Amino acid sequence: MTPKSNVKQLECIRENYCIGCGVCTTTNNTTIYLDEYGKYSVVMQSNMESEAEKVLQLCPFSSLSENEDTLSKLLFASDSLKYFDSIGYFLNNYIGHVRADEMRLNSSSGGIITWLLKTLLQKGDITQAVHVAPSNTDSLLFEYTFSNDEDSIIAGASSRYYPVELSFVLDYIKKYAGKYAIVALPCFAKGLRLLQQHDKVFKQRIEYLISPICGHLKSKHYASFLAWQKGILPNQLKSINFRKKLEYKRASQYGTEFFFDSKGTEDNTTVENSTFKMGTDWGHGMFKYPACDYCDDVVGELADISVGDAWLQEYIDDYKGNSLIIVRNHYLNRILTESQRQNNLEMKEVSPELVEKSQAGGFRNKRSDLRYRLWLKNKNGEWYPPKRVSAAKTALNRKRRKIIKMRLKINDYSHRLFKDCLKKDDLSLFYDQMTPVLDRYFLLNHGVYRFLKRKLKKFYENRNTNISLWL
Ligand SMILES: Cc1cc2nc3c(=O)[nH]c(=O)nc-3n(C[C@H](O)[C@H](O)[C@H](O)COP(=O)(O)OP(=O)(O)OC[C@H]3O[C@@H](n4cnc5c(N)ncnc54)[C@H](O)[C@@H]3O)c2cc1C
View 1 (tube, rainbow, N blue to C red):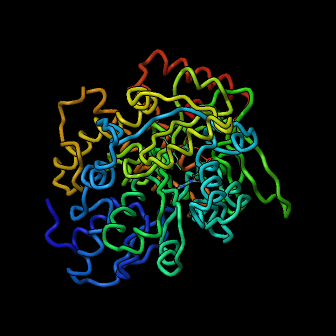
View 2: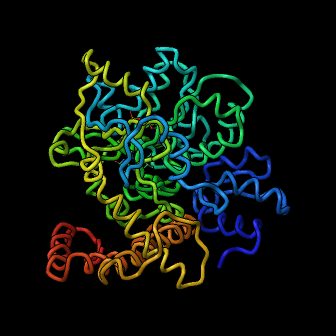
């Protein structure tokens, strides 16, 4: 099962577990490219075992890199932080938002990351913020960018469910001295921490790592699929706001805003996420990087601060959004509490148990469901990167196991079907083949009665159109 050589392990990672972070390009042995499924992946430049070893030591999904427990202990254990199993080390946890309404409304949840980057820059604690913003190239909607002024930080607010990679960012940081804060998903943050262990320059220059809490990352085709469903062809799509806040809805019922080219002029439209036929149910996991199914870090345990959505009953009614904040750095904690006193932030301290509750779905998927996915890998004689949970079948009941299997299938179908749709210029292929799978998934989850009720409702909604009963 374990790959026979480092080169073979790298090949296996490239095929199944590469998240395309780009950290390994710092070894000069790899390059990053966007594959045919719209995901970043790695290419090796040489076949030498010793070179492959260097790459694997920096890879968040390899057997030669330390895991989150070991790395977080090195980073935080001596800093009088507390520990809670699911969220790792923490100093304090909060739920809150920025008081400046405009910043909050343009952000994903409470605007905390944008506010923090802006504050660190203002105070001179960093020289550049490294985060994800609209791209200047035609072929990409978003990419990592360097911001050294407030406007640029604000322009990069909001969550981009879109592939990004760090290779050029790391080239730049290596070349140019500075004090950088990087916003990095948990697996990217792991790659960066591994890099900091191997290369002092990155340890000195990367001052802060900020992690968005993460369910999973989407391929480039996710944005195209949503747009195409609304009649916007992939090549017409110019930008997308995945987290458009809707005044009359709950925080969790956000919309999607499309910016597109319509007969030579720029147009835009916002749609409620519930109106998409498919794709916006995160449980389905369409267009998810397969690597995300083999990640066990929900909150970004290696970051100085992690920020997510406060998915809790008492906050969800406020459409403007609230952030869940896990702080692991004393200085950042001071900035937050001082700003609360100065009325720039509205914040309340919360227990780690409440943090866990707010991310219940994420923990179920990345911890207990993961055990079954690992068991399936064992059963098929396939290698997987070492995880902090063990493979198990009976830890989950039969129904849950079926759900997990169906999710794997939906994910796999989504990548392959959409590639075909692009080739044949026909989106109906996706609907035709995905609908029966989604029907079976719904039946399994909710039973026959709710299934038929839902079908009839759709039938009546669509009876004046030629849309099939089974969509
Ligand atoms: C792929 C992805 C999956 C997520 N999954 C979950 C989840 O399951 N549960 C949950 O609670 N929260 C999740 N989040 C985090 C959540 O969407 C918000 O980012 C978080 O609540 C911070 O909100 P904010 O208002 O403080 O941030 P904002 O003020 O809106 O700032 C967001 C910052 O993140 C940067 N950014 C955007 N996209 C990326 C990216 N792909 N990689 C790195 N940086 C990026 C932006 O440039 C900006 O600086 C996810 C985010 C992403 C990008």
